[in-house]
Image 1 (cartoon, rainbow, N blue to C red):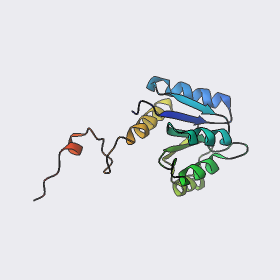
Image 2 (cartoon, rainbow, N blue to C red):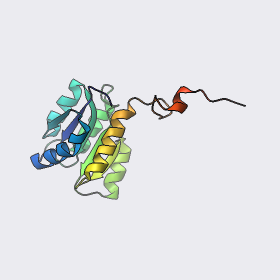
Image 3 (tube, rainbow, N blue to C red):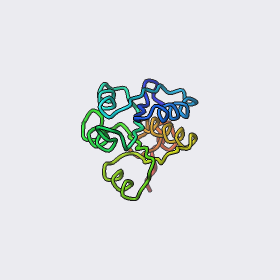
Length: 146
């Protein structure tokens, strides 16, 4: 995992932020929290964010609007965004796909699943163009052609 990359948690409910933070604690990654879309945008634009866990429904700027904006900017488009929602629908899943987010999780989120996804997404930045980890044996050894 990137030593300096932080996980940005965005939810308008303090309880949800604390649950996500506690679930990620075993990973030992730095976490920063925002309780609204405006603050999430400001934090993401400052840099140093490796993954964003973003609540879909929030007052003011929604999670979908935040994701759409961040995925359009050069400086933030490569940050994986995981949308977190209380109600998963096929329409929301299609919207998430259309936006280009990394994943969509339905609350309550299984802590183990959350840790696996966040670990994977943080490590994805260290992967080659073929998606394999840079230290994987096949990534270091060129393939022979007949």
